[in-house]
Every structure is written in structure tokens, then in C-alpha cells.
Length: 234
Image 1 (spheres, rainbow, N blue to C red):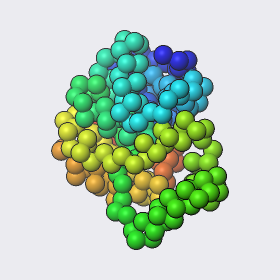
Image 2 (spheres, one colour; image 1 turned 180 degrees about the vertical axis):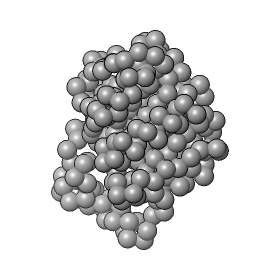
Image 3 (cartoon, helix red, strand yellow; image 1 turned 120 degrees about the vertical axis):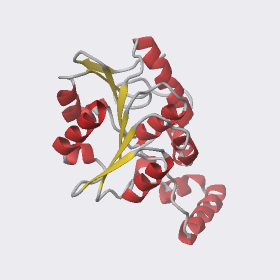
């Protein structure tokens, strides 16, 4: 395993944090400080992000799930609670679908629901594919998102694998308790996505934080932390 940047703090039952895409473990600073009073908190940078090593090959969501499961075993972390944001939520959903990797899960702005494609979107995809054949470099500059343009070639291939996988079927396999938290103003993973997730995961809960966006855990850390604490202890 390449270099992994890890932050661990506190004592007690294990609680793991999974960060979002192009983010890092420090994005959970308010949660790490709060929950390390009650739990042994472990936050790490996924391969390819933060201070961890670069990807040597494109990872899919399943690959990140495999990596996470192996990391937990190597660190001696057994059946922890998990807090995940956005892309980290994708990985958490995939792990939760496999069974006894995580105990209770709080997923904030959870990505992984592909919305119904509009006619405009389909036309843009066709235009991109045609442009890529004729002028690939121009096509990448013209059609790639700002996020996509910052990535290395390996990370770009990984990104394609990640964003093109819908996780509804995986969510339907989850049997562990899950709390979905969403910012009412979240445009990246809207409340409608969280509602779909909640409908897929039997017995799950949904909390919408008014006035918060995609980073609801940072926009309103007090409300988020209290809701997560109550969920973990109920």
C-alpha cells in the first residue's frame, strides 16, 4: 500500500471519516474535534487525495471500497461507525452493501444517484464524443468540468468510473442503520438524491439542514454533530 496520511485521535469505539472528492481528512475538522471526546476517531486521505500517495491505476468506487476495507483491517479497526461526505458517501454505501464493515453510518450530501438524463445532456454527450474523435485535446478543454480539468490522466479515468455508477442497487442491500443528512441548498447532491437513497435503504432516516449547502457538516456543524451523536447512541 502506498503512503497513507492518517489522523487518529481520542479513545473508545472506533469512528471513521470518509472525505469527499478533491477534499481531504481535514475537511472534517469540527467533527474530529467534537467526536474525539467520545470515540477513537480515524480520518485518512484516500489514495490520490490530500497527502496520501497518488493512484497508480484508475480506481472505481468498488476499488476504493476494497482499499478502505483492507486499510481498516491493517489498522485493527473493527466494525466502526462512519461519517462520510459526498464521494466518501459513495464508498460508504458500497461498503455498507457488503455487510459487516461499518456499524452505523451518517452520510452527508451522499453522492451516487445519477439523475434522469435530459435531452440537452444527451445532445452534449454526443457532441463531446464526436469532438473527441476529431480534436481530443480541444474536446477535453471545451466539455470537461472545472473539477475534471484539474485531474491527472489516471485520476480522470478514475473519475469517469466513479461518476458513471449509480448506487441505488447497492443502497437497497444495506441492512445497517443509516442517517442521510443533506443541506437544503445543496446543488451538487440535491435533497431529491437523499430522498431516493432513503427510499432504497430500509429503516433509514433523512435530516435536511435548512440554510446549508453541499458541505452541510461545515455550514452548520453544531446541528450536524448533535444529530450524528444522537443517531450513534440511540
